[in-house]
Image 1 (tube, rainbow, N blue to C red):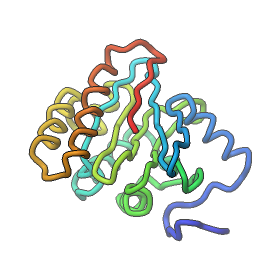
Image 2 (cartoon, rainbow, N blue to C red; image 1 turned 60 degrees about the vertical axis):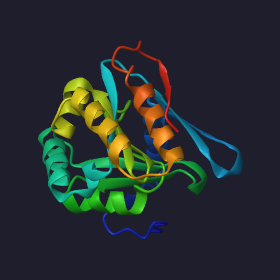
Image 3 (tube, rainbow, N blue to C red; image 1 turned 90 degrees about the vertical axis):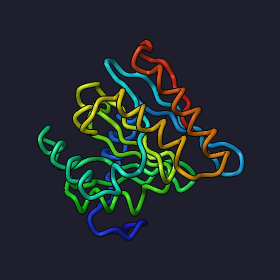
Length: 199
């Protein structure tokens, strides 16, 4: 079986009906459109009771935080997740085991690109979206997001704001991340179906 990313733990999804199911589920939460010069536009849709918060890559980079994420996901009964690479690389779809090593391999193989990790057969139950090598967006029901992060969405916004203010980064990236922070801060109170441009 061909594996374009050459990963050991991430297994490509190749069955046509499974690919369709994954894409249809994801389409309830995310729209991805090709833009000039190989860029892509990513729009997040507000689903019922969802919040969406920006977080730094420490969520998957730090082992202790990966362990917390893995234990929380397993506590909710998840054994594997879908991973989809968005954009000019083509839609690559994988199954990711909910293990420390599986989450780390997702981060190393796909986290530097626009990609999404999620669960849900009919529609996503939550998503972890990589929009920049240092930034993820975690979206889902408020309580689940709280559990996945280990702190409230409000705390997540505060931490992300401090990250944007104090981490060394080019001015253009800082401006972009400030826009993401502002855009997502209204997600919790937005109507179902509201759109948030995040890339």
